Image (tube, one colour):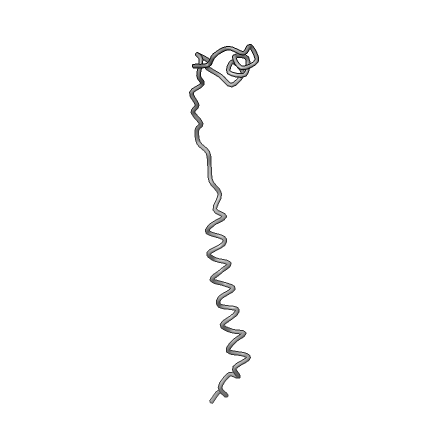
Length: 63
C-alpha cells in the first residue's frame, strides 16, 4: 500500500496541474488569425490609397 502524499507533494502536484491548465488556455488565445480580404471606401472619389493621398496632398475637399 502507498504512503499518503505529504502536503508539500500534494501542493506541487496541484501547482503543476494549474500550470498545465493555464498553458492550455493561453495557447488557445494565441491561435493564428487569417485575413482573407480587406475593403475600404475612400472619400472624395478616391479609389485607392495612392489617389486618396494625392487628394490630401492637393488639399482638396474629400467630402
